[in-house]
Image (cartoon, rainbow, N blue to C red; front, side, top):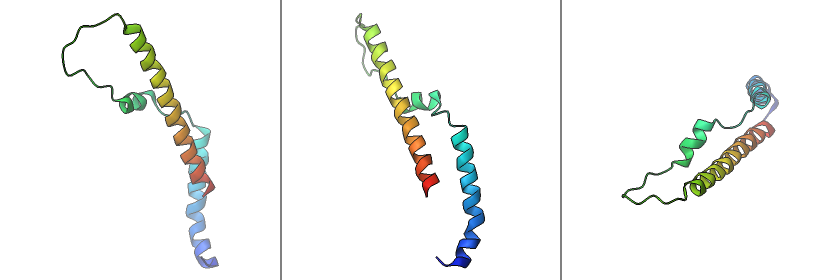
Length: 86
């Protein structure tokens, strides 16, 4: 890339960096609604007898939810960092 091309692209790069800095300053992670949609909890296809393990399932779902949200937050933040570096 020669100097003329660098000067032509500078304005766009500066704008992109400003937008990324703004996103970093307001980073709150992935919205809870997006996490719930990504989990795609499936409904049972057949009838079955409910056992007394509701609390176990609820606890497991909560742990999975937390792990998925943390992973999505990390991935989004890493994406922003890589974009900012380039």
